[in-house]
Amino acid sequence: MDIRIGHGYDVHRLTEGRKLIIGGVEIEYEKGLLGHSDADVLTHAIMDSILGALALGDIGKHFPDTDTRYEGADSIALLREVTDIIKKEGWRVGNIDSTVCAQAPKLAPHIEKMRKTLSEAIGCDITQVSVKATTEERLGFTGEGLGISATAVCLLERIK
Image (cartoon, rainbow, N blue to C red; front, side, top):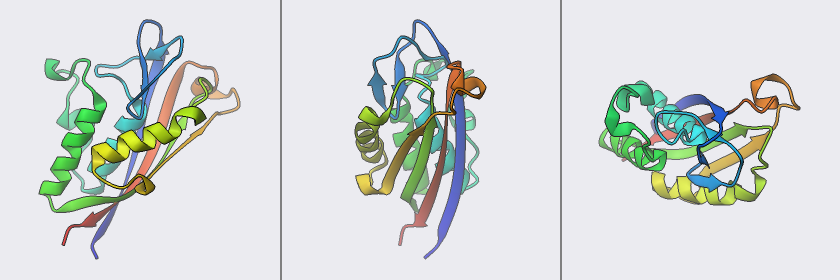
């Protein structure tokens, strides 16, 4: 079986006056993430890992922040587009392992909903999508509550 591995990373600054959306789930919090789209840091890292596995660039190449069509875009809809791109290339997601780094808010109560939302957008079973959350013990920009980052690794399998 042909397989490919991809890695993704994304980071966004926390700011007032924005919704906080992570993994396609809106989370009640006093701040949201700043970005051209909905700034869903986890979904962005996952998309970059998928695209990177096939050397197809990153989300900035496919959905540039200079294009007004993507202003305020729903990142889950963009993830569906990324999944369509790799399917046309003859690949599917085998699994995804991801980590969100945020001092606050606590993400544990939202992880299962994130996994469900992400797996549905990708068109795979929920058991193929892992989402974890951690803090940086008040160290660095995430630890100081200035932003949130996410990493993701994916395994792609060639469709037979």
